[in-house]
Image (cartoon, rainbow, N blue to C red; front, side, top):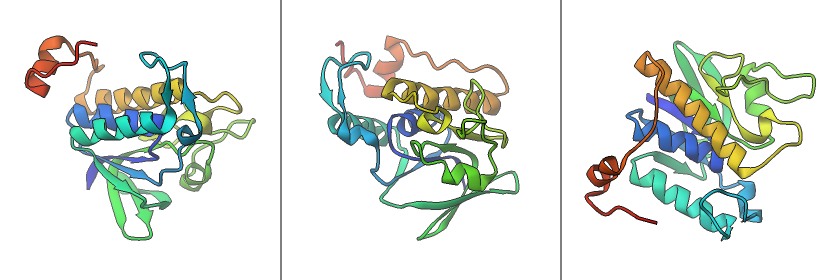
Length: 195
């Protein structure tokens, strides 16, 4: 059993995985590489002047890998269900258990619907400001919670919001993920990017 399972390897899913793993929660990502970022070119992402979407995803993957996220590349999730105090995530290969699940599957809402997440009148997954759905400890991000308002930065922010809420629940208080230069030095051994 892992702490957090993230379904989807785009900006939302990888952001959620980065923050949960970085802050001590064992995290697994199921990534079928179906992200729309492969069709994108980024001009509007803070800190990125101009970058191909696929190159950006490669950078995110390296970042989550460096923190020890278990990334199941190419393993498709076929179902998510509540199970005991958490969730059972089914793939063709196996069944996985987690305390929390973050759904980051773009506009595909099938897994959320199968889990029993409520939908709005517009047909999108109903999530609060923390991205938590009507199913406790299940989060929905990005295009699945917006009718036609999709954007990579918003998706990454949704993943971060889900991660911070999960971390707050686990720590029993509002959690702040704010690093300072000394944190980077201790994490990366003095090899801090000054850019």
